[in-house]
Length: 208
Image (cartoon, rainbow, N blue to C red; front, side):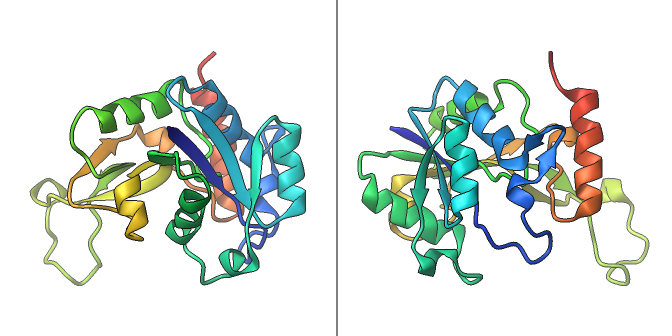
């Protein structure tokens, strides 16, 4: 079973209520719910939350909800610990597809393309993202960007994790599929400016 998990904790110190704040007319989390429901390679979709308000929005939009325990809703709780708990409650799940609600812009077929890529080889996990060439100022002598390989940064759009690594409490394994995502889909929402950026990008690049 390919199980999609949309993790949405109620507490957000940086941007209170962000998971259900309206983005282009829809609660933020609904964008991820709708993307998951359109994917053909997902067998089941659920929202993991500790918030009754988020749960209500998810259920209103036709998504299953699994409430978290208080321990998994704390500031110290990690996403992998949430997935571990879900894996124990839904043992038939073989692959876990994590969709962060704060990365709401996913073009058509992105989720299916990621799952297909993950299944194409003996991969432990997959993450969408981009190759960035950032270096701390003062750490190099005016190094040209083209001379620096850079590193792969995950953008939060799609993660695929095997049951094997989840059972070990690991967020990634030894054989990672780095799925390069288009730039307009790389943006995550952390603050007010991010909301404005995503609103414009989604209007400009959304497919009919």
